[in-house]
Image (cartoon, rainbow, N blue to C red):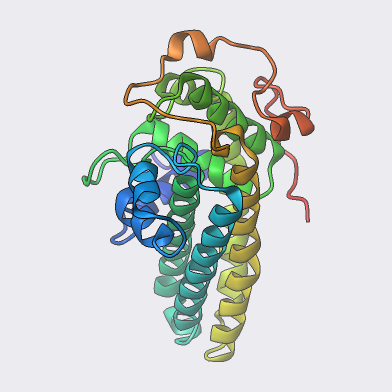
Length: 291
């Protein structure tokens, strides 16, 4: 790759920002600690233990309870990211070279945080395998698709449904590595990343303009963050809660998904939500976000 090409490529630009955000302090959510804390007021200790050891679906926790907890988490993360964005807008135009990149990084970091929380509530496996700085390609792929759902791309919706269907069929705790890094899902991940790279550039420009005037910029920037982050988080919640993986009948076992057979399955997507959007694993056309 020629020097500077990665910067000009929207796909590479998005992937670089996502990777940096995933490595920020406090961004990674401990799945067990979060589930125990989030479910403590709503579930018995036995149900919580089973939710941690297997999944909330296996523990029989209803979608109604999960939706309530998810809404609480969305409100919390939205409040945090909006406050931080407003604080970044206070210095004004002289500090833009510092505050805008930092604001984008923390914004994406909070998107990674809410994506993890919603994934764990709706019975997805641990997205980060250890406490190190490394992020494996499968996790990057899933996070990219989650971001795509947040931004309203139907191809991302379909791909997330397909991945969930793979895990549901194999009743496993791990992401389908091959499908996300080499198989039929991978081209969609790349297309979604490219689309998000373009959207990220547009959003960064909007944030730059909003911060040009001190104090006033803080109000506008915080409001802009609130107006974008909240609906995106709600969009991801709605999609994840609709998947078959969330249904209480699903149990999981401590083994890895067998990729070979599943990846080559070109049949219909496993989830009704994906079928609703005319999902086909080879269709990688991206649509503009819908209101």
